[in-house]
Image 1 (cartoon, helix red, strand yellow):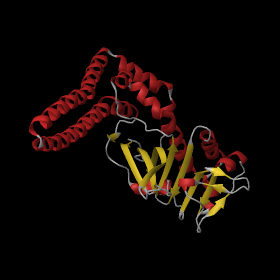
Image 2 (image 1 turned 45 degrees about the horizontal axis):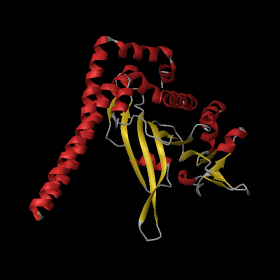
Image 3 (image 1 turned 180 degrees about the horizontal axis):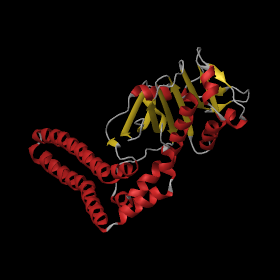
Image 4 (image 1 turned 60 degrees about the horizontal axis):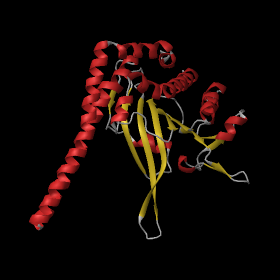
Length: 318
């Protein structure tokens, strides 16, 4: 990659620089003003909603059928207002807290909170799901334009009445880069979801071994007990997956499930953290807790390890 981006995220000077920037009097005053505006946007829908319900009930009592029409109009404009208000909150959060932190580290970083990541990337990581939702799309200003998003995947089952019930398969984060890897086909590293007493392994939403894939064993017993490697390119699998990369993956196994996908044109990584990062604040208390340094710390470790993986893979390939 030409630069070791991991060092930028692990360098203690980075967090100190962000903290010092946040503590300047002008920034303190600006962030206080932004927070007050965000609190108003959270409180206002509640007050407007109460007033609207009161007017609708009065109208229903005195105008009967006209009240139903008014109720429909109130519902339409109310939901439209809530969507616009949520989008405004997201812009405030992105413009004043998230983007400044990320651009302090990588100046060309771009953030579009409601933009989605290419669903093809998500399907390769969690192929067992039927639907995919993503938000907080970030394009980092590094040499490879690393992509980030929150992602949730799901499938549907039929209940006893024949109705569709949504079941969430994955909630977490995805990081991806476009890179010519020279891999023939693909390599999947998937976490073990469960194993029965006969030793049969199951990988759930991450997908079982496919007909065209070969399972690659490593010399790390710890790794083999937590992950499986399914590959159509044995040579590059053994070339790329050295002990250092296996150690990175092993270090995550007790924190959360992790899935790595590589093909000829991209490398992507999914962290099953069971939560979204950089969520738009929902209460005044959430807003009070916002800080530039706090937002940075949410993603520091994931990005550092991802860049470390990319650096090691590039070193093996070129």
